[in-house]
Amino acid sequence: MTYADLMTAYGEVHDLRMAGAVLEWDQQTQMPPNGASARGRQLATISGLAHEKFTSPAFRDLLAEVRGREDLSRDQRLAVGELDFHLQRAIKLPGSLVREMALTESRAFQAWMEARQAKDYSLFAPSLGRILELVRRKADCFGWEETPWNALVPDFERGMDAAAIRDLFEPMKKSTLSLLDRIRGAEQVGTGFLDRTWDPAIQGEFGRRVLRDLGYDFNAGRIDTAAHPFCTNFSIGDVRITTRYTMANPMESLMGLIHEAGHALYEQGFDPGDEGTPLAGAPSLGLHESQSRFWEVRIGRSLPFWEHYLPLMKQYFPGALTGVDPAMMYRALNKVEPGFIRVDADEVTYNLHIIIRFELELMLLDGRLSVADLPEAWNGMYRDLLGLDVPHDGVGCLQDIHWSGGAFGYFPSYTIGNIFNAMFIGRMEADMPSFWEDVRAGRFAPLLEWLRREIHRNGSRDLAAPLIERITGQPLSVEPLAAHLNEKYAEIYNL
Ligand code: ZN
Image 1 (cartoon, protein in one colour):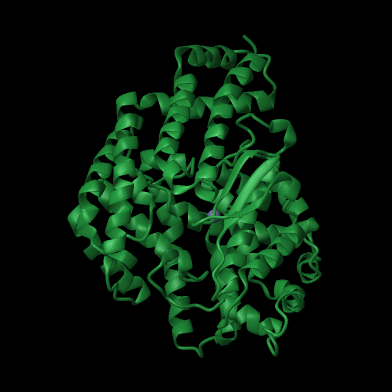
Image 2 (cartoon, protein in one colour):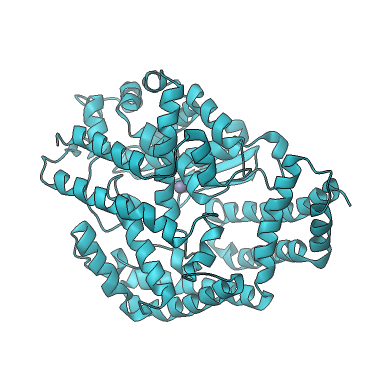
C-alpha cells in the first residue's frame, strides 16, 4: 500500500466531513426553521459515517503500513504524522462515550439557551454537571498529568499545557490590570458621532469593498448573513464567511467582517498542492485567531487604516460623518471600557475575560470548584479583575456557548492568538519598512504576501508556537503584546 492509497482513503473521510460542513453552513444561512430536525439527523449520519471510516480497522492498518514506509518525502511523513495524531485520539474514545457526549451536548445546548434566556443558572447546572463528568471521562481515556484539563487542550493548542499557559497569562494579567488602572483615571473617549441609523445594505457594500481590498477572493468565497458571524471552508477554493448588520452601529458588522475575513484569508492561502490532505489546515486555533485578530484589531482598528478608509466611508454614507476625522474614528474604535460580555470587549480588557474562564475551567475540572458554586466564583473574579458587579447570570457565567458543547480547553486560544500576532507583527515591520505606509495607502497585498509566505502556506507542517518562534527568532512571550497595549493606549488616553 502506498501513500497515494492512504490519501485516497482519507479523501473519502475528508469529503464526508466537508459535505457535513456545507449542510451546517446551509443550516445557519438558508434553511427554513422546519428543516431543523431532519437536518440534525442528516448531520449525525454524515459525521457518524466519517468517524466510522476514519477509525475502521482497514484505515488503521493502511495508516500503520504507510507510516512504516521508508520512501516517504518530508511532506508525506508530516501528513501521515498529522493523520496519526488525530486517529490515535479518536480511537482512544469508545464509541459509547462519543455517542453519549453528542446526546448530552445537544440537550445541554437546549438547557443553556433556556437558562440564558431566563437568566436562571439552575436550569443549566444539572447539564453542566453531566458534561463535566463526561469531559473528565474523556480526559481519562486520553490519559493526563497534573490536571485532566491537560488532556483536552491538544484539541485546540497542541504542544501546550496548563502550566505553560499560566506562565503566559500571569504576566499578561498583571500588565493589563496596571494599564486598566491608569486608563480609569484618564479622560474618556467619545463615540457619540456613531449614534445614528446606518443602512444595512450600504454597510454590506462598504464591507465588501474593504474585504476585496484586503485580498479576500470572492471567486473562492462568499458573504452571507447569519445570527452568529463565522467562517467555514469546504476546500481552499470555497471559503465562506457570514456577518450580521446592526442598524445602530456599523462598526460591529465591519469589524466582524474583517475578523472573519482574517480567518478566510488564512484558509484561502493554504498551499493549493496540499488540497484535501491534512497539511491544508491550521496547527492550532490560536494561530487561526492570530490571523483574524491581526486584520481586525491591528489593521482595522489602526489610525493609518482610517486615514485611508474614512474618506471612502463618507462617500458610502453621505452626510453621516461630517466633521469626523480619522483620529476621532481611531479613538472611538479603541475605547476601553470594562464590560460583562466577552465578545463585546475591547482589546485591553478582552484577555481578562479569557484569563477568568481559564482559571474557572481548571478549577471545575480539578474538582476545586463545584458546579453549584460556579456563579459565585465567576462573579467574584469579575469584581476583582474588572471591577464589575454581575447583575445576573445571563451576562455572567451563562453568556458563552462553549461549555455546553463540552469545549473545555478552548478559551485560552483567543488570547494566545493575540500573543502570537503581537510577536509576528514585530518581524513584519522589520521585514517591510513600508508596512504602515502601505496600510495608509490601502495597499494590503504586501502584508498578505508576507503572511502567505511565512504562515499560511506552511499549513499544519509546524506546531504553532515553534512556527512563531522560528519566524520571529524569539521565544514565546507576552512581552510584545503587553508593550503594544501599553504604547497604543498611553497615546490614546494621554497616560
Ligand atoms: Zn475568530
